[in-house]
View 1 (cartoon, rainbow, N blue to C red):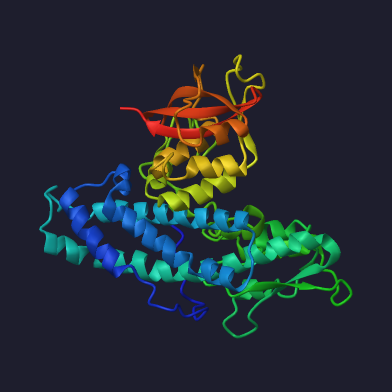
View 2 (view 1 turned 180 degrees about the horizontal axis):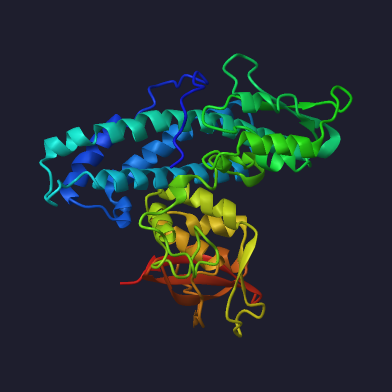
Length: 416
């Protein structure tokens, strides 16, 4: 695993100690009571709380920055989503390693006090040392992501310049690309927008084209590759703003143990029709259950707005699509229509092609229901009821048919 370096610390002192000591104590008791670990346990209360608290710490900078300036809601949702899943996989790896300390050489469960003593080093590594480096990385990454979106609006009207902290703690390989000046469209920025390592303090500034000489792109990329030539450093070749990611997409947390079988997984990590065979997808889907429903609604709405879902063309929907517009998505994702985080993610799975909608059953409108006349004014002409399978469960999805032209999601519930 790529271990966060602590060589270039002093980036930013957190407003509170970056540690998960209380959560790890609860996890230790919980894990010992389970006597084993399975990724499906992540949705239980103790791991869920640990995931949520980790995400809260790592999202501190994004929340503070959003108070000071307006950040596009789509970017905010994407960054929050990335941090949450990162926190989920981090918790998984911690529990997976901790579970290896549960039993003695004879395969017997250790007494709790012995297990508690044995786990201290691992706890300090994950929930203090790593977490502090990840906290600092998130601070730099979020800043660069927000700035990148601003620079995208300006296009190549200005150049961007790479700048180190300029002191004696700057890493030699980072100093090699100091003052690199190139337009935003240059491929250099695709891989080498800071942060370029754990506790990296480098930044990028927008500069006038006439103020600094243009760097040679090929030479700059060669220096960037040299800066990240070690296998553990190659994960930092990404652009937080362009990819809307806080943490490197190739971070070792996103590897599974035991080794995953993604041979049938055409969409890799998050979306797999054969999720039972894919450890990563199974963990990913379990993490979705741990989200606060309001957080899940925000993320799903951001990802699905403006998209459509193909359906079986029926006499009631001549165009055969479900539209996912802002108003109807908000209505669908509200608590009364889809209560759990998991139920909200079902629509996401359908849109991604991982849960197929078959031929629906048609229902006429119930004229005794409240606000029915208002719905009729909005074009409601009937209800289609779909039965489907997602997350290895059976669900019922209802959509409202609008003017016989398309459908909108109305509500979803798990079937017994």
